[in-house]
Image (cartoon, rainbow, N blue to C red; front, side):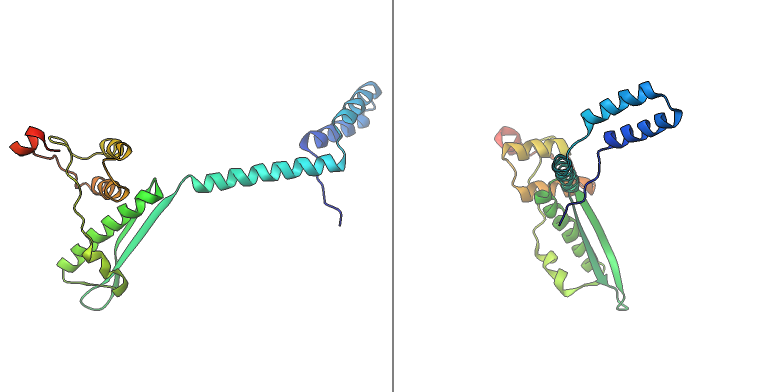
Length: 190
């Protein structure tokens, strides 16, 4: 079965230009275009290879674009006292998916605990969120967690992916506070 080929844009442009010049009957320019066309025309095998290479490049580009903006989301529904299903939280974190999944877990866990405190009930598959320990490591003395500090500590290996994700969520939720150090921490603790 023959493969359908399409000429390159340059070849099409040369054909259109040649057609326009033929209409004007400018034979000197037509001859020049025809010479140029013979230099830029390709055999069908060459066109097929170029088309395949171009398609492969587009495929790789599109795949890379879809992989860059990785986004991790989560939703928490609960039932109010009347039995209505209500969306309690809808969270989204963009960055490192391996870390963002923990940020989503942290935010949904805090939301679940808040829903229960208000007297509502969770859906059965989300009850595990109540058992999650949402404590995070303390920031260095006299500082509060911010994105730059957390990222640096994570890159140094001082934080696990889970701790880093929890800290990112804590920062984004506006819960980060300055670590007021005790005299013991000032003397040598973190």
